[in-house]
Amino acid sequence: MSDTRANRRFRSQEWFDNPNNPGMTALYLERYQNQEYTRGELQSERPIIGIANSGSDLAPCNKIHMFLMDRIKAGIRDAGGIPMEFPTHPIQETGKRPTAALDRNLAYLSLVEVLHGYPIDGVVLTTGCDKTTPAMLMAAATVDLPAIALNGGPMLDGWWKGKRAGSGTVIWESRRLLAEGRIDYDEFVGRICASAPSLGHCNTMGTASTMNAMAEALGMSLTGNSAIPAPFRERMAMAYETGRRIVGMVIEDLKPSDILTRSAFENAIVVNTAIGGSTNAPPHLAAIARHAGVDLNVKDWETLGYDVPLLVNMQPAGEYLGESFFRAGGVPAVMAELRKAGRIHEGVMTATGQTMAVNLAGLESLDHAVITTCDKPLRTHAGFKVLSGNLFDSALMKTSVISEDFRRRFLSHPGQEGIHEARAIVFEGPEDYHERINDPTLEIDEHCILFIRNVGCVGYPGSAEVVNMQPPDALLKAGIDHLPTVGDGRQSGTSESPSILNASPEAVVGGGLAYLQTGDRVRLDLDASRMDALVDDEEWNARRAAWTRPELHHQTPWQEIYRKHVGQLAQGGCLELATAYQKIARDLPRD
Ligand code: FES
Ligand code: MG
Image 1 (cartoon, helix red, strand yellow):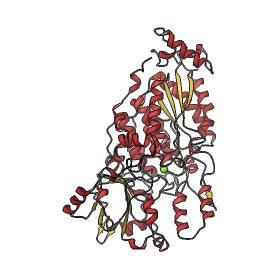
Image 2 (cartoon, rainbow, N blue to C red):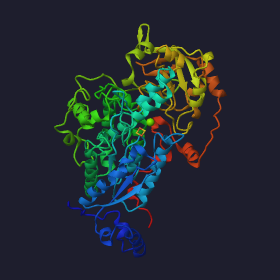
Image 3 (cartoon, rainbow, N blue to C red):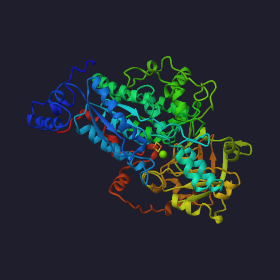
Image 4 (cartoon, rainbow, N blue to C red):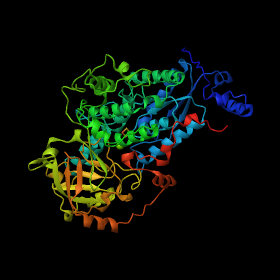
């Protein structure tokens, strides 16, 4: 057992060992003793380690954590800590209506309240499905107690008729095949269910794998944590080691504020490009940064991330899935290759108690078909473009998923590479899109751009993953798989569509998208990172003056609270008032 005594009182001792308030101390002791803890343990100057358990029957992507709890607790005990498990608000991407995005800030709020108000000295954050990871890192940043992320890990690889079937990514392909009449409904369902063969989160480089890679790149987990598939023995070992390590972090008083520096976020941005990561990473990282008090701008994603090469050959940007990524070395191998090219701030402190340089020493890609090297990249300049113009102040485009066909069709104006001018088709939300996409009077052809609005944080509410709209059936049958799409919502991290999304400010708060009309000409200039409606100023201003904010229908109290306080995606979609609360563990709650 390591030395668990620190030269200071633990926070939990204010509850369990406070002679200045014997009445309350006795009350805390009696109720925690009636389960598995003895007075001796609770008053023994051993740190109490919370385990924020995000797994449940309602949250299948994170359910593996229910089976990892014993290993986490064993690690905590063996290192001299006392584990206390508690549940978190479930966030299941594929279960929660109207969107799981609405729940990220709710889970954040509730975890902040738990970490602040209970006798906890450090916490294991059990991450996995898309928003569970940022929700927990945001809370850890606000409270600033020692915290370490433990991913549940991706599912095993999915297979369908001898081909890899990746979570989410198989849906977008199957949806087209169904619309083209090439498969029937039963095969459609069969293909999609085949992509989920075991416990775990999405096995593609969707938002779950991305956000766990981000946690690791930020230094908030043990080295190699993110890529281990959920059912592997290495996952159980990682749970044990993470439990052991959090005790050491408490003894060392190693807090999120020591790890989540500007340099750590710059590392995360670079890693995101190299892994072909999700377009949901920018808002989630913006939110974590704001709660950590770190200045990060959406434009940083282009400035720091655009010219980074794509190194990971994983769906949706490539072909492989999670098992291959793990065997090739996972995130540490990617970071080691980036480090050789001088693209990583290697002096940053991490949860291991060592710098990133120490964590990555001696590591490299173990399979160059899956993780390649910087001198033989899958693509160069593979990061996000951050566009602006009269339609929005910022919107993202993931360039690593732009196919040659798409580039030729939509990004090459005669003589002007990267420029596209087209007619706008505007939808007011997903229902309107489904109702009208095949309406022949819209005359949608390959010279159109599809827009969707009122699907951002305030509008939807929560910001929906609906921007990757499919072209009309007639175009699909003619072999046009994608049209350029633009919107103030998001898209799934598993999508292989080069949409222009996360447009901020969104239409319902008066962003430029609100004034666009079907039939307007729109110009996309990728090299200049601009997109503009070609409508003259007088007309544009008249539309703006005539615009009234749409009536919003709240279905739950939280939807109303959320809409009242949420900011825009470019700034992380945070509860704005919450960003003023920083390092609140220092401010002990009243007894
Ligand atoms: Fe939960 Fe993809 S739906 S990880
Ligand atoms: Mg998603």
